[in-house]
Image (cartoon, rainbow, N blue to C red; front, side, top):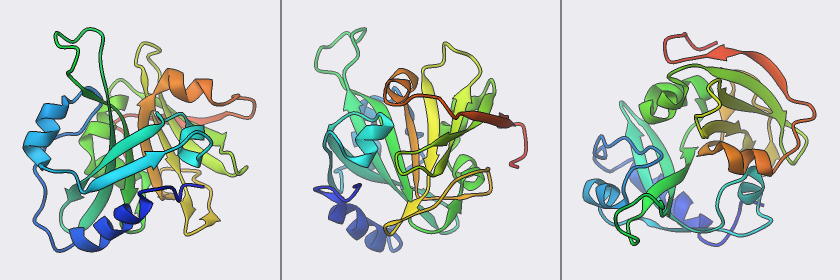
Length: 210
């Protein structure tokens, strides 16, 4: 289950963020230095733990402790933003850390299309175009994968629809999502068998949501 150690801190964030000022406009994307996140967002709200076997881990996200921040989208939408930092071998400093995976949890009912409009850093993954792919999650329900057509782009976007213990399918850009992920394509593909994958369309930031 996604209800893991630290999740209560996430829900506390949801109730508190609506009264806060909008956060800085830093685009939290894969490769953002941890130092830049700290400078823009300050202290994290709390930790979020992903253990092996958790639903999130089965999607392909890194296990261990994540940091909880938030992004806001005017006029009134709020996203709990859960960030994982990893090191890059090309970094000049062995201690330097960078965003390597993101999980967004909308505070209110939000569609795939709206997430991409609100979060340009997510949409930028599909700058050169993404296939819209229906996949089955571990509960047997449909989720939506946005897979870059360029195989050298090693980030995919995955939209899942569980809510308050009831699983819901995400089948189009207009579907309500509960979790949005930006994560390594190789990690995602290593955690699943694409037996029933179904390509249903194509999307880029220049194509209206469908």
